[in-house]
Length: 286
Image (tube, rainbow, N blue to C red; front, side):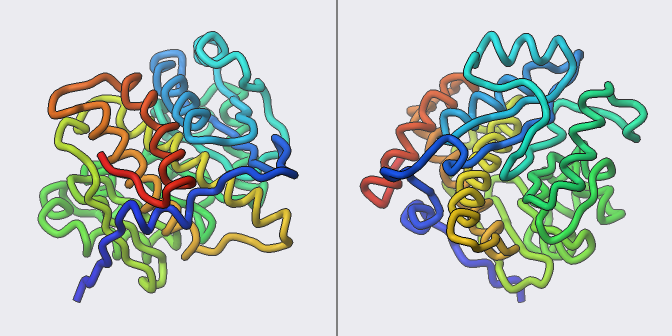
């Protein structure tokens, strides 16, 4: 029986990390981002912007020159280039079948994401390009998950809970399956969460890029706090952070929507307020 547990905004509060008096930009978490391409620079901009608005000590962006220029124009506080990070976000806006097809800087970043030993948030396009495992969180929608399971999109959509569980077991990674209800599962199936905070208006281009940035920031800040205390994140932790990202993303979308359509920029602008409500009030409503 696919008994997924509902995950609400009140549950998300415990997984949203706030800075304290002794925090530094490094202790607050550093997120490495390897997203976007010359063809799709907007994916990089949206993911980075979302991460900054969610709250992270530093973002290091690595990508082709056109995407880098767009990112730094939008967010001049971002650092360009590879360095020490607490988590990676890779893959949004990238379409390649091998590392050889990527520009040199992005391919180098993907290798770091595979080798650094820190959690990695993996957009569906990067699944075949990085080493997966218990520290990876995959964020596909039904169409992107279908090839991983050698099945059809319709089959995934018909039973997303089973699909998420099968994909987590097959890849050995945490899986966040996007949809009207977002299903999150660990590889051993011990954590099964479902978040239903979004609005149907969120089904729009760029929404997944924003979600990746939110999740990357939440993971990096949590990893930074864990490192400071000598601990390490587990797949269970990553699953709860993934469900938290879905909630933050969904509540921000409802606030941006107010019952109608909205832009991804408007969604991103709402993220800081949602995070504030979670860390201060322990809850966030749309």
